[in-house]
Length: 429
Image (cartoon, rainbow, N blue to C red; front, side, top):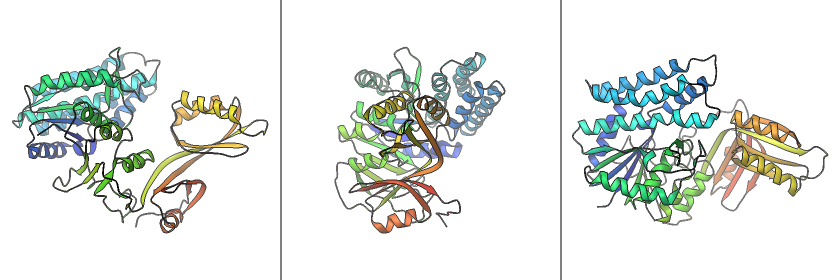
């Protein structure tokens, strides 16, 4: 049998019971070679983000925030492995990297400091899982993803240097698999050529698993979620969702591009290039069939609904009321790229250019400051982007019944709308 790659997200290891459940899934795999990619435990990434923000705010106590995170991890470790002095020391030695940064003045580059601090979440969770597997009698070893995934230095959205990364992954894992059957490593993180930690973007652990799968020609990649597979809608919003047993790579790419959260958008392409099947399975019901994503093509998909919440609409107009022409668009797009803004929808009219973007407060403020030197810009918050794949009029009417449509784009298989929810709206009974 060939190598399999398993990826476990934060929800699967949010507490001691979660770690134990993951251990049982790994034990049941009975595979000769297994590489496990782990996210940070529970909501640790969000908590570490607050540590970073507190460090940049002189009125906040970042050490206090960090001490809570440390305690949560040590308490979980002690529940898993009583009398675990060796492993406690290793965890504290990992957290000390943050202590050193908090003792200094904040770095001039927020994104740089973000990556050095937030990345510790994956390091400690992977060490905890590796410890649990070892004391449970499994031949497991730990790999620092920063030793093998080489990126550029675009902090918080680093780009993978594929050729060198593939070489490093093959060499390092080959050595480790000579002594162990299981390698535990981290999602979300890599390192620059200067040896500084970088991150691959929020929810980037799926992408990490895809990188390892591609570089190692994996037999299959498995993402373990708290849902039974890929669904036709978000079960937190809708009751009548159904599981898709099979998806083509193309359909999965479309879904993730439009914001479906079940898989990170960059995940599919690397494994598609080598026809590696992706299995999306439930860690709550490991025996369930889940969803398989592969080369199978079909047109018989039901309507698939994706919501992107917390959107901001910018209306950009010229100051002299002239048409928004090519030279204006060039300036706008250059500023958007410089501020690393991702456009969810856009529309050009005679006298304005509309873009819907994530409501990232800091980046929007900086972008507006630049745009307003040349343009009149108005901003509308608390919007949604609604995308329906394989739509029909019935589903469009149902999804927009309690929403105001600000603008839309309709293609043969996809309709996408920027909508404003009516405050009294209630989706789920």
